[in-house]
Length: 245
View (tube, rainbow, N blue to C red):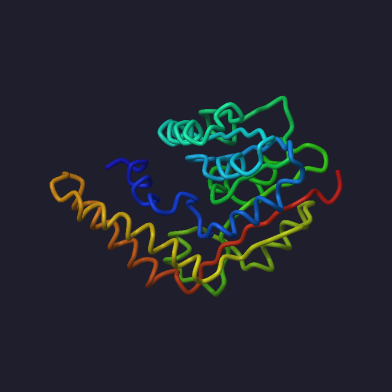
C-alpha cells in the first residue's frame, strides 16, 4: 500500500493529523486570526482541515493551501465544496518550500509539517517571507518532555526540550503571543486513533491484499509508541508575531 493511502486510513478519525482536540484547534485559530477578513496560508495543508475550519467559522476569510499530495488536495476541494466555502479557498500543488506568492498573508500556518522545511526554524524563515506586517504564524512541532531513547530520536527527530525550543524561537526574532502544549489525553487520543483506525480497516477488509500489511503496521506503530516515545514526546503549538519588522 502506498504511503498516502496508509495515511488516509490512519487519520480517518483524526483529520487534524496532530495531537490536538477540536477545542484546542478552535482556540488556536481564534488566537491566530486577528481580523474578520484575514488572508490565511497553510504551508503543508494536507487535506486542508485547518483551513476548512477557519473558513467555516469566518465568512469573510480567504485561504490558500500548499501541498505536494494531489490526493490530499482533491480531498480538500471536495470537502470545501460540501461546506460551501470553495470560492474562498485556493489550493496549490507544489512543495511548500517552493511556494511563492505576490500577496502577503495575515496568518501563516504550518502544524506538524516542519519536516517539509528541514525543521522548526527553517519553517519560520519560510513563513516570514509570506507574512503581512503585523501578521501571525501558527506553528506546531514536537519537543522532548524527557530524555528520549536513541530509538525515539531516530524515529521522530532530533528535537530539544520545550524551554530550549522557545529560546531558539525568540532568538530568531519571534515573540509568542499564545501557545498550547498538547495534553496527555490529546497525545494518547491521537495515537489510539491512528493505529486503531488502521487496525479496524484491516479487520473490516480481510480480502484486501493490503490488509495483512496494514494490520502489521498498526501493531508495530502502536508498540513503538508505547515502548519508545510515549513517555518522552511532547507537542507544542505556538502563535507568534515578529519581535521587530
